[in-house]
Length: 87
Image 1 (cartoon, rainbow, N blue to C red):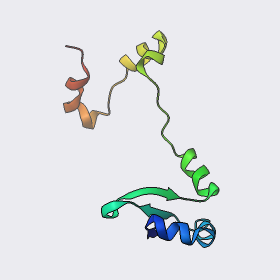
Image 2 (tube, rainbow, N blue to C red; image 1 turned 45 degrees about the vertical axis):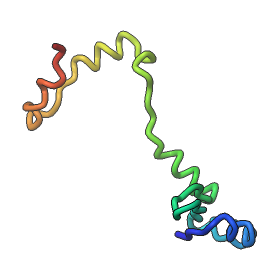
Image 3 (cartoon, rainbow, N blue to C red; image 1 turned 30 degrees about the vertical axis):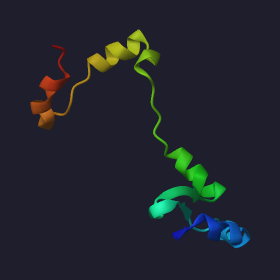
């Protein structure tokens, strides 16, 4: 992992683009906070594959909601079931 300031990135862009094919390049802003990360397309595709998929509750069908309402946790988590019951 390489961390650099924007000015260094601008001066060395060709070399850093090549380096980003093998490891992430972090471009920092003031106070050393990471602002941007340059990664290879291959690495980006891997990240996309593992990206969590989610839905809005308004996108669930009535059948989905019914199935979810019938779920329960493993017996070892019974002490948490009360939190799932409608009040």
